[in-house]
Amino acid sequence: SQHASSGDHCLYWSPVCCRPAERCWRCSVRSVSSAVKRKALPSAFPVLEQPLQSDHHRVYEANLRNSNACHNQYLELREKIRKGGGEKAIARHTQRNRKFLVRERLRLLLDDEDFLELSPFAGFGLPYGDIPSAGCLTGIGRINGLWCVFIAHDATIKGGTAYPITVKKQLRAQDIAIQNRLPCVYLVDSGGGFLPLQSEVFPDKNHGGRTFYNEAIMSAMKIPQVSVVCGSCTAGGAYIPTMAEETVMVHQIGTIFLGGPPLVKAATGEEVTPEELGGARLHAEVSGCVDHFAMGEKEAYDCTRNIVSTLNFQLPDEEEEDEEQTRRRKAEQEPLYNPVELLGLAPKSYNHSLDVKMVVSRLTDGGRFQEFKARYGTTLITGFAKIHGHLLGIVANNGELSYQAALKGSHFVQLCDQRDVPLLFLQNTAPTTAPTVSTTQAEVNSNHLKAQGAMMSAVACASVPKITVVIGGCHGADSYAMCGRAFDPHFLFLWPNAKVSITAPGHAGSLLPADGEREEEEKQEEELNMRLKEECSAFYSSGRLWDDGVILPQDTRRVLRNCLDIIKQRQYQLSTEKLQSPLLRI
Picture 1 (cartoon, rainbow, N blue to C red):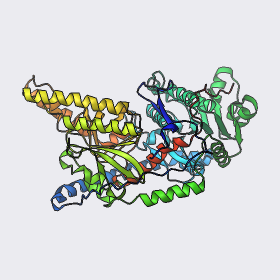
Picture 2: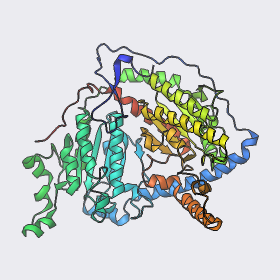
Picture 3: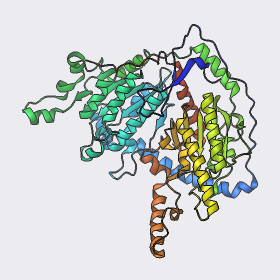
Picture 4: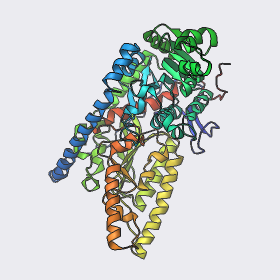
């Protein structure tokens, strides 16, 4: 099977989890000396023959035009992100402060540039202005072959100040590290919280303080954390390096203090330099707040890479890895059809949806798919497939989530949970629920409600990794049953054409009571439809961090491969069972 034998992992309730339904999928201590080489069971899944037909041409072309328009918007936003805080801020950062840009730092830290960036469009279109990338880059990349989460502040954007969206993005990255047991590296260059918005940054449970709570919890769970102080760590930012397990600090450019020189002068009249108050030499030699002193940034990232090499992971040796890669290459095949065709299969609207099996056949190895309950509840497609050699269960909308479809979905999700097979949800839900206009319809809706509740329970309680890709609509309660954001998928991505709202634009009437004046109702409906149209776009959603990023349809297979590789890495961590107190410096 994809995993080791049943004795190699266990399911149990963990006291460190934030929610009772969040069961930790852990691996016990693995005996390397007695390890037995295993290979996946052979499979010959049927090929999904789903070519484009002549009668698809009109819908396909309309979808393609819409995808091209969305792609242009995607490229435009990505270019804004690359510019960071603008030319003046970049010049000040690199010339006056003599610091590397955040992407240069990542190039020095990571093995290569093939990393999975998370929520790059977060921070656009917010009430308090545009904050490119929410003021920090987060993602997952390899360091010495080991997948690690990184949280890297971009000081060219508002001086690295933490806005509410910055805090939310940092917390999401930490959640991913916890869910997938990934080491976490912080590149700290922050001026602390944005004080005019302190009520949205400081007081609540999921505000700034949660970052430090998570650091302690992750340490107790034996999830390694390393911090690099490569700029200012002022106010709340000072706690990130002091709570990490190991910290590297860069001479001259790194500082840690709660209040800087201006506050010292205001309070005491004493003039002091940042280096004297909280520089690398002081914290490495006097306070002990940092563990490694680096003369320059390059030395700091080399030191960080060396720290990562000491972590409690044992990756397959090169010979074993080469054998595994050879087996996977033999097992995996390119999709039967060109993934570029997904651009014309990404629905412009729900009415432009083609058979979702056409999407599946362009994502899976060889276009192969072992369908489950093929003749029952046909508006939901379920079955097993492989993506880059990884076995997974696929749940995909192919119409309204009916009573039968929800029962089928519940059955299949529980089956995958029983077999420890990860789940992939391809979400394209109906724009609105059917209105109750008769006794018969009321009975249908009631049965639908019960079956939908059963599927929601199955999805919420499934302990296997879950990945959701919204390929069309994400509306109403159907989106919950298809593992929407509230149901805590390990990763959730949107295609650029995706629409996220309680009901689709043009269907606002289904939400309004029909007991007022006709003219007033029509006005309300028009206003709500306009608002839905404005707020439902993928970029609006990603700007508010309701997802882990907008991905291009043709890149979906590569992104899924990275996610499945990341999820699989937990089996290489040694001795994860024992819970302990967090590592303290004092």
